[in-house]
Image 1 (tube, rainbow over the protein chains, first blue to last red):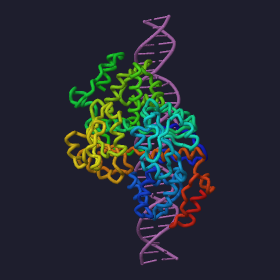
Image 2: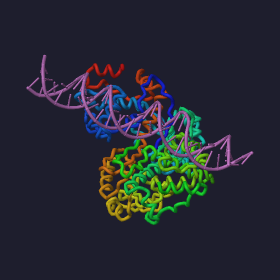
Image 3: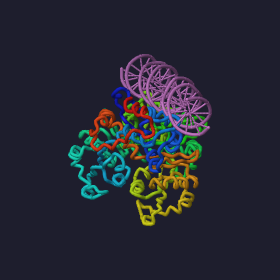
Length: 256
Length: 256
DNA sequence: AAGCCTTTGTGAATACATGCACAAAGTCGC
DNA sequence: GCGACTTTGTGCATGTATTCACAAAGGCTT
């Protein structure tokens, strides 16, 4: 559900696999939670359970960062927190701007997870004059006309796009032109960006559709519903056979 | 960024690869957009560009559903929309309940993508008496005490958890006990569920951390910042050497 | 009706990810 | 100070996903 355009690996393959990178934040969260409970040391097995993965995978993931465990004992929580944070780039602050202050933008602005570790929201922007000037979570909403200035002056390096679908690509082009190379997109569109820019996508309706697929499968697969015509609670009208296609093709499609 | 517990494949391997399932909604959206523009037929190359993937992948993905294209021509948009919708289970309505009506829950309740195709929000629940009774997007917020009744009476099959982290597992246990087998989790915790229940996770701070990793990498990797001590704008204080570890280990970690 | 041109669908090659299972490395008790 | 016990780190086998490249299949033109 997430797309990114990967460039060729720079540097002398410190290359951490993408799948591992995606799990490091989960481990980090589990570690913070252990830390809060005063736990000083943790085994790969315990941490794996807390993170919801299996322990071999966890160990292999961590081995990409270096050899930070102690055999017979486990991992020292504080030290591992630091190493993962460092690897993820959380030992420095990242400046974030949120563009689009609708329901979702507001929710994001108020989200504690931002401020907590390494991320600082430095701007809320919107095109609607009704909203501009409003104060949300300690920030005043600014007009999107000032986008380029704000990005430049405040050193924004991550843009969060929470605009309507129609506006997203335009906003994206502008933030990229202003030098931003990391974009988190909540709008339901595929953004196109030049090489070297990372886009990650969060898309509610895609997640729901994936769940629907599995839910349907648990209930016996799609065929059963469509075979008998009124079975589904409120079935969408199946379109007729494909207008342009040959009959043969349609028969195959239905029977296969 | 998304976890699910997969069961053994049922049925006579109609098994569509998970990676493909995750892309079908993207294709579907691109197709809808073509449909709105009145396009009747599309080639794999065109559709692939619109969906942000390469065309071979698109064709292989579609081939898992059946043989719905016409060689020399392409795919008929309307027909393909129907086939993908059917495969994803969108030809029937899915009843959704949103639990937790904070900023995020409100944003979700108001999100158009829900109603649009196949999903119907049939309940907004919260534990806070201040919020219960409030009307949001045409629905009245109900008390979470009625969770089990609501799920049963209204046939909820997908639960969206948008509660604070601390409440999420408890809520999850309750919805699962009430028979829900698909959960979309926005709370920053790893939910544990019995076999057969699908959980998908949407996690803002994880996405940001992944972006930060790549952003840092573009800037030259983690080492440069930590080598000279004041380089990072506001570097977190690096913890001393691992208290319990032997000196040898630390030296390795730093020098390797 | 024959041949050219386009585009699908898929075998085969490659790349990436997961999980098992165990040797190596360390701790701790005696 | 030694041996038993624990837990890491990783080689290897397996499984999944991506990409290439092309034969087969259809439409369209003449």
